[in-house]
Amino acid sequence: QQQVKQSPQSLIVQKGGISIINCAYENTAFDYFPWYQQFPGKGPALLIAIRPDVSEKKEGRFTISFNKSAKQFSLHIMDSQPGDSATYFCVAGGTSYGKLTFGQGTILTVHP
Amino acid sequence: DAGVIQSPRHEVTEMGQEVTLRCKLISGHNSLFWYRQTMMRGLELLIYFNNNVPIDDSGMPEDRFSAKMPNASFSTLKIQPSEPRDSAVYFCASSWTMQETQYFGPGTRLLVL
Image (tube, rainbow over all chains, first blue to last red; front, side):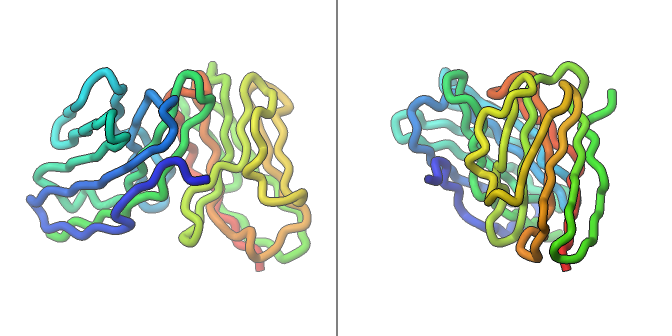
């Protein structure tokens, strides 16, 4: 049972554009929503995370928007750069859930 | 501080052979996760441990796969016998607790011919 659904599977953006990746979850026990970034040949690494007590979190060019009632959250990358080209995973977890659940991943390509 | 260490980084073997993948956790971490990544299936959680105890192995594809934590800082994932469909990148990750940030190793790229 896939509990975190991520879209799109792939995304192509021009340099300077905005990249948007969306995720939806099912389990209301989730209370921790990180995003992981994976470069080719490397393991995934934590990029930014949010908890449901806030609706938005921003770190530099990266912003998470969270909609608890809709059980959706999204990653926005402003002023996208070629160096942002990577696979992005939305993830859900919780203090009572026991482990992190990864989405299927979005391959982002930023053209110069 | 050293991150998660995996060995070997690359493994090429023939169908039917035994394969052992190794992982060293970050010092002080109590949880250990094994993942498999392929283009077709994405990132799959195979098994995870907490305080050396296996918590959930429902992601292990079949009995040919086994994982152990002989001590608090080390884990192995064994495939016996290996098959071509096992070809993938295998990651281990560790964290302070099961629910917190996972730190991934560089992965082992396995090719079974």
